[in-house]
Image 1 (cartoon, rainbow, N blue to C red):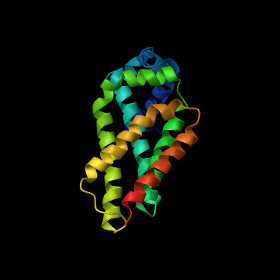
Image 2 (image 1 turned 180 degrees about the vertical axis):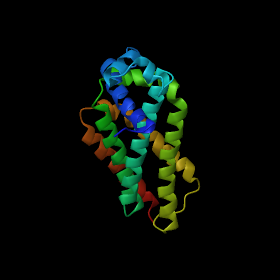
Image 3 (image 1 turned 90 degrees about the horizontal axis):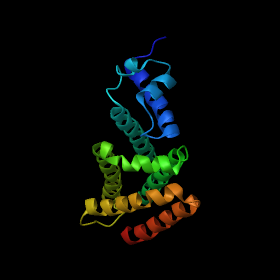
Image 4 (image 1 turned 180 degrees about the horizontal axis):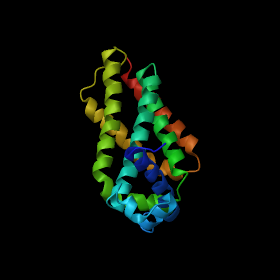
Amino acid sequence: MRCTKAERRQELLKTASEVILEYGIQKTTLDDIARRAGMAKTSLYYYFKEKDEIIRAIVRNVMEDLLASMRQAAAAGDTSEAKLCGLIEARYRYIATASSRATKEILQEFRSFSGLYARDLEYYQQAQKGLIEDIFRQGIGRGELKPVKNIELLALIIFSSMIGIDWTFTFDEQRERILEGLKQHMEIFFAGLRK
């Protein structure tokens, strides 16, 4: 059975991810990706115009998976605190799993190329912040939380603190300790917001 162009494209992105995690962004060539995929480089152009397009697509796939994981975890909680703690835990478990497949050097290289996928990253960061805003709005709407003057600012502060911990969490040997600290931080935070 033949796969569709979209399915083949996803297979190629998986192959490209493997090659990039092995060689790094700069050292990986379209020839490397095509060779690993068992196709000619010219055939690869049918799916992608350039390596930058591949990198952006890989980042979008990772961000989509992360966002879906966070949504699922938030939906499983029965209180605002459980929803936000679930969202945070899902985010960091995803980061831990994803980062364990790459060396620190390759992760730093992805960071140095962030300008390449900055627009996509901004979109997904706004979506994650939106999830946090929704949790607060729902909690206030259910009468579980006190009204807040500026939900967007509150969500931005929480999300910014999460981003600030990303790099530390990725490389710290005591990830569970950091995750537990985040949960304690949320307990203290919600103690002040509960009615």
